[in-house]
Length: 140
Picture 1 (cartoon, one colour):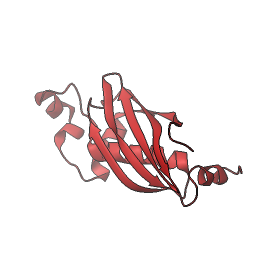
Picture 2 (cartoon, one colour; picture 1 turned 90 degrees about the vertical axis):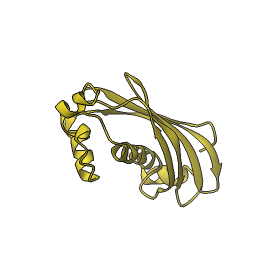
Picture 3 (tube, helix red, strand yellow; picture 1 turned 60 degrees about the vertical axis):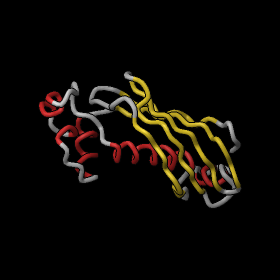
């Protein structure tokens, strides 16, 4: 793995269940994450995903790529366009820097409205970056 390497994209279908379950799991009971009528009264066309769910999906994207020994060291994200049910978010990533067993990856998650999330993730893989993920999949 080297700076400039591109991670395979990950498509995530944004379902009503995903939005509500993510809010409940993160103990975010704000009505805009589970009550469509309340969300509309506050100016949104529907319920929308909370930042903690987005943060978890970004983490999943990175650990899915780097393998089971990957440890997230820093996740710095910013939200943009909301994720509403019925849309699809596509996560993409580019390795910005590699130092020993640690990589910094720039991540973007986009949907039909634009960029939902942008940021960087620093991940340690417990060996030269890339080797752990290949070994976890049975390749040398």
